[in-house]
Image 1: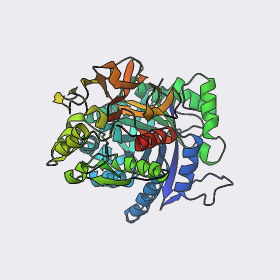
Image 2: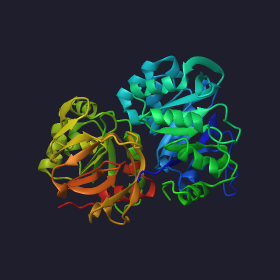
Image 3: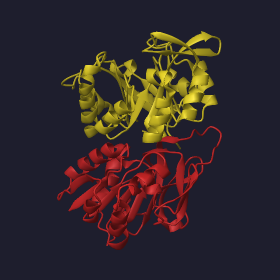
Image 4: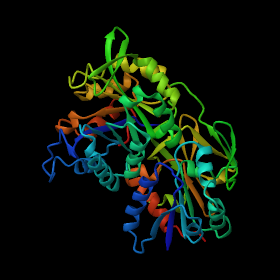
Length: 252
Length: 212
């Protein structure tokens, strides 16, 4: 049976992890490569780097991090943040990323999704969607790290990028992000039940039950989390054991 | 001894190279691993790896766009019988035909066709993630337990005509070919280069494989 994936996400700024794990045995807690190695060893199903570096001059630093991670971690690595062109995607893939996530650029230029999917394969292209609730059962797409509103409906947009060749959707609830009050399972359910491609749930997870709900209620194929892992509240194996005990298929 | 990974622009080339390099380091007699788009280099290889992500027709076209590349691969694999490993689309290309965005011809080395995974309620397509694999007794699976999880990403699969060519399967929800092996030709639908320690076992087995 296909397993639900647990994906730790690292925010990287100028080649350094912004919110790090406080593992005692870690020489350098700010080194994304070291953190990735730990998650890899602990049974993460995939890894995700989100580059939040403001200046594009520092892209080389990210590529270096991706390369070193790819040399040490043999699980799928998704990299996103500031991806605007086919060349950006090519550089990340050449450094060893397996999937590239596109957010704002996909909203501004849908052709990028189609061209990238044609060129590198649908399985390589993740479209990241930042969603904010506007009324009951309706959500709006935001861009630029959640700063700019659009008038685009999240469900319409997800269907459109699926059609254009996105391999999966990384769906972040802006309302829940950072709240630790659980995923927006209404949002997840609407999107997962209307799409054929897998959806990764993101934003709001604070405990193990939230993880379970993202799959059992939201219908997510994969669960992305940052802070609950980084601050050492839960280890990846805690999440997997809890899900397994509740009859959710996971890789242990 | 030289192992070549064929570079025809496949997106996961670098992932494949890094995982082979890592497994290679643990061998007593490591291979000289080379990424190449040169048919002459392929002709002189002792082992060949063909990666592949994306659409079947695009991958095939990219290989045939390199003058002499297919001929070199064929000479090495079919005439000289050197060990060959295809990964994902690199394995699907071994089929006779594929029905993905039209009908296409494959290399035709292993009888069968590449067909779409049947759409079933509650089963997302692409089949993406870790799934259990059942395999036959085969040197390429040496050291692995049955039902080991491997990482898959695909919407089409290889329906091989001869059951004896299928050496591993998975279920989604119906049975899907996970690996094929005929003589010196081996191919996996899953990505050993992304399947953590279990994937490294298969890569090591391929590096050690003495097909006679």
